Length: 401
Ligand SMILES: [Zn+2]
Image (cartoon, rainbow, N blue to C red; front, side, top):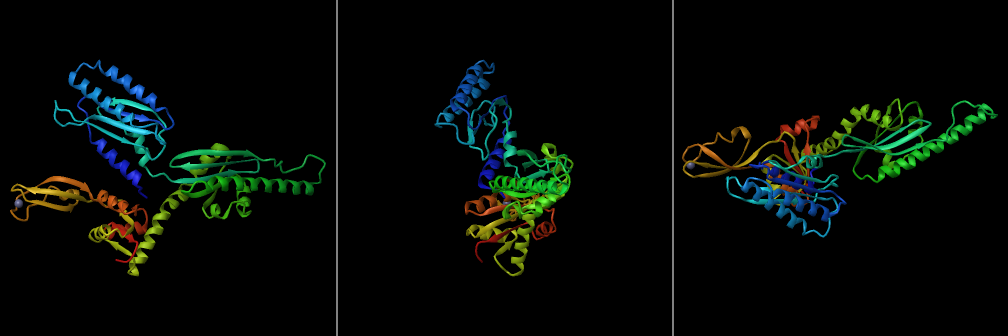
């Protein structure tokens, strides 16, 4: 799902990517979450006095002015915003000798961890790429009779949240108990331990509202006993994707569990897409609240009737403005290949490209404007391929049009 925040950030990244400095005159400043804003202002001031030593007069002026713009901008905040702040400034003039200092600023959708000051011919964008990537979150449990670990898989990162040891003794008695009595005590302790795992895991996983699934693993049969024992809350239990044999518990165990669950993860990541498209095709058969094809989709977007906009990852079209040699204009949607092959319908001369914008960007913007959601559809499922064949763009509607 594409949110308004990531869409805005993606747009900003695209614009910043296209800017190349003639000299090292493009400044990137990242104020990390929770850091003191005045420290960042002081640092930029410091850099400004250093910049006064730059030899080339034009370059010196551009850098000093860009830094001044950043200082003025940072001063408009009372303190560092919750997730930190990214600020970019520099000369964007295309003509040598002319100056046009621009500034971009945004509070990122995710906490900014690192402080950055950088002056270069390009802007520093790496930390922002990470933020626009959609991250899937899964809950992990590894356990045996001795210990258990609960963790998360976020994107590719594995994080251990809680580790605990059990009080369950070994399988055979060394003391004075009869073997039967001993087994009885051991089973009760094991059950307590599993109850504790279930309670903690449920509590930790329920807090994560975007949790896509849960995977349980461990050496030996205890993980199966655990799953049969109703130790997880129903809501968490319904999210369990599968149970896997692994050789370890602990952090190694969590890692091994993820490595052995590639099949489960792939399937889960496509599940939402499959469900969405099944709903789409079912509504289509019933002549329900759906449209497909670009023209129809544009029409329902105009009246704000779109609940979910679906776009195939292979959908690629440019909204282009063309002009012929005589000066006739034409605005149309074209594939990349056709952009430079258009002839004027009036005077039959070749048409030049004046302006182009991705159709995906236009329809995404429109959908978000009316409070709808945007879903990118892969071609990794049978339904996804079918969707691509009927044009790769469509919408589930709020009401029948
Ligand atoms: Zn013409």
